[in-house]
Amino acid sequence: MGQYYIIDFDSTFTQVEALDELARISLKDHPDREKIYKQIEDFTNASMEGRLSFADSLEGRVKLLQANREHLHLLVKHLRKKVSPSFLRNSVFFKEHADDVLIVSGGFKEFITPVVTEYYINKENIYANTFKFDEEGNIIGYDRDNPLSQEGGKVKLLKELNLQGDIYGIGDGYSDFQLKESGMIKKFFAFTENIERKSVVEKADYVTPSLDEFLYINRLPRAISYPKNRIKCLVVGDVEDEALAQMRKEGYNIRHQDSIQEKYLQEAGILFCDEANQPTPEQLQNAGKLKVIGCFGKMNNRKALEVACDNGIIIFDDPKHNPRNADFISKRVIAFMNEGKTHMSSNFPDLQPPRINNAHRLIHIHKNVPGILAQINDVFARHKINIVGEFLVTNNQIGYVITDVNAGYDEQVLNELKAIDFTIKFRLLY
Image (tube, rainbow, N blue to C red; front, side, top):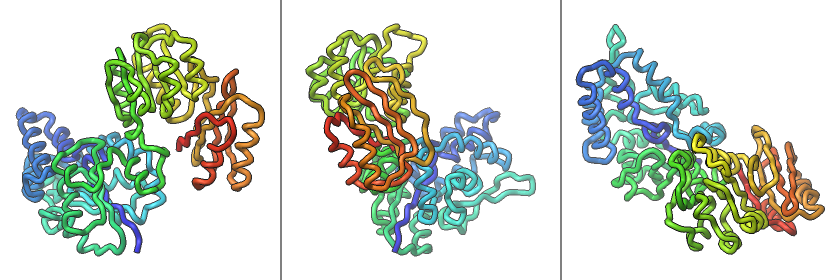
């Protein structure tokens, strides 16, 4: 009795609906292309939202495609660039669960297989439709005997497979929910990283804005320790749209407010502000979750800089107000959140550690007193965890340690690191 993960392809594994994209490739020179694009998208949405049977939707879309093998080749190249970001960074999950992950899609193997097999997914675990071609390589139809071409096809397929164990479904459409509705799977996770369909979300066991969230909930191997959608980014004042676009792309939960209010700052992991809307030292003293501030302008309160540092809050600002580099601050913030890099901070010591592959990265921020590094290393030694990279920098206020280890660890290790005297903040990056 194992566990299986049934994953959709369109708008889940990838950011797009592949047949819609194929239409844009095959019909790019057609005089009525915009009208046909709209018809295909309408078929897609009607089916995904449960307003039209999947079989009718599929037949309608394929008739409109006017595509051939060369178009499919171009589509595959395009789809490889459109893999959902959270799937892209979590290849470790697919590698470690290669026998447990099944791609089940109403799409077509001709474009799904070359994309997903690059993520350690076994060919025999890919279930999808197949096209029919004429002698010139034009698509003329599809295999109608395949259960996935029919209404309720995913349910029919799982009945045939008769998997023994707990089955979890991840997808964005009504056909994915049908697996839960039929009793074929234990839990259904509505995947909303690319599109959120209200009719599907309302019926899901969980809403997962990214694969990170799914892996976190189920304690599965993942690239980052804590899902970014759970980290609130508070935005106050005049903040560049380009910078916010970068943060949304990373998956952070953006919240706008007119002023810095303590109740919102206490919930925030990240603060973006402008020069006219900076937090006070008192507000920073009570911002227990806050990790980083990005100020679009100069942080002009020296006391606030010191209090932030004392509380393990790093600050990046832009004294030159450089309009030609609108995403300068967001790049610094992202580099800190993802890699622990402090380069160009206005209150932390400078550290730019290289990323070490196949390692876990932990950050320890503490008061600058002697002996902390020895205590950190003693924790790892007692638990027989090998250190593959370690970096320590200090200023007058804090010590900042990044440790890369090549072995797994349990909660006891993390608790002991947090319990070291003079610890200010502890983070597990990945």
